[in-house]
Image (cartoon, rainbow, N blue to C red):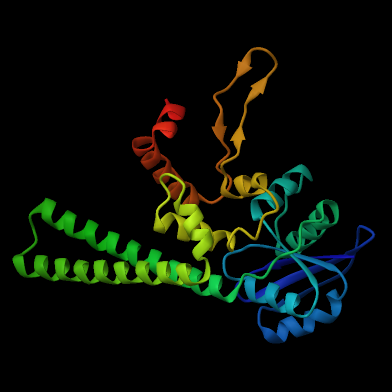
Length: 276
């Protein structure tokens, strides 16, 4: 028996399949009351849901803590499965059924609850990214004012002071994250930073997004998760496209690794020779 769940901000839809047939469908509120109401209908089944922003996490944690088998699957993979099924209509109920069918066919691996340390650091990292985004918006606004020569000295000074505050907060938050990583993942961080081009920020991000590399059984799954697997395009003897990475994973990680790779090309002779 498998259960597919489609989560949104206020509610979630479930579809329970037994022998490839839908035996139960219902919508519940996405809160602790809805979680408890749904539990009795999914006991003993393999429960799967998509990793849809923050909306799935509390539900996945609840079922996990109740001893149920839970899988959290990549929405893009489910979308590709939907296309293979030639499914045209898209509703929350149909999505729940689709996720259940996908689970019955592919048996995705069981979800591992991230550690409390990782969850805390992820929140700090998310806050840090928000600080950087807001600082970037303010900097661009100042640049536009200066380019148009419409800003007076008082406003110019006020914006620059605010930018200074952002710089200080960003630096402090990066240091806090680095210290937390050093406390909980000192050995792993040290190993990562021994790689040419990998610095403190790159190492921290890799640890945060992989739960200390506990999420993967082998390097191939890690490469696929990050969207770094090569994609070869060939057909017959005449069609040979240029090879690319698939870019179906996490853009944030690819950006960090790209910067690390460019640094390694400049500073490491072996990496430079390989690149050239």
